[in-house]
Length: 505
Image: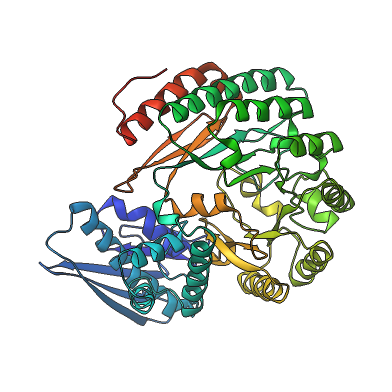
């Protein structure tokens, strides 16, 4: 679809409005200036008053000469900052553009104009401000065009999170820790995480682990000196169980020696997502250090799919390693499934759910495939044929019904750009088996310190909630060259964040 969108001259609108258009037309040819022979033209006018912002969109589908129009107005207070005012203008313009495109295509966007990763964070904020659930829901529907059933999903998740972490809003003076291990047996086609094939890279692994031990020691020292507790620790990657059992043992020993009161930390998770990395020796190490929350991720129980996406393990291996982990005392296992993998439709996804039912892990994260910009799958889309929007939506409905009928409840949710069907990723668990770390990372109520290659730190001010981000480099060589400086930089930020007037490291 060749689209001309005029009336908007500010370049800051280009990205959000392009994303709105792409919700309807994946391969849209979108122009923000006059062009020859557009198939669809939209003109948007914005009127700013002292107390209101109003946008009007007029669209013409040239093949039929039919006109489409939408108007939306929002109140604005004199106290709004320039940044807040622009955010309101952007959402008002997005609202009318989305409304016109819904009319033209007959396609309803269940999440309305929301394109952010964390919709439940928005609901938490409204409730924290003292608004009733009814008032908060009405605002979400009126201001963002979110459908009722998605608002109900958001509310059920918020309720569950506050049951699991009753002090969620008061954890700003604690931190959580993310530890990134950037190695995997192979790279999956959909992946953009820092993940390097580990075979033949032992030198890089050794150097990386040296830097990681340094970061753990120095951050641990800072936490002890300033009496700051840790809520959760999460080992991700990559695949943290790609390293050897001996390397894992030394790493967890460092964690216990360096971090304050490890025995009081609410949760420690290690992703063992690739079944081909799990061995009895590694499970013994996890037992030794009292870690029993792990992930074993099938993604699919269709062998042809696993081969197509570059996962070099078998379905049988996933099942066998799950039973091995169970037999060796792993009592809290998460599994990830992905909706919309190449070549899969309703029948294949139902089969995957049926196989999952035979295992009944404590928690289950249902992802909708996202075409991430840097992934191999996105670079070669013609090789990876996926289901259409309607079938993807039906697959998500299948997951929703299946989890409910098997006793799972949703407890966290996030979204991604270029996600199939404009849907979402939802974490489900059996009662009492939720991942506290997943709640903390999604709702952004406390600082999460990222250690290791590709690890991102998110510094949340304990009083204002303002977020400062800091990312370690993604490739091991750059990390190995600069881990000491990255550690110093993070401690400087932490001193400012917690108002500690001294220089460390």
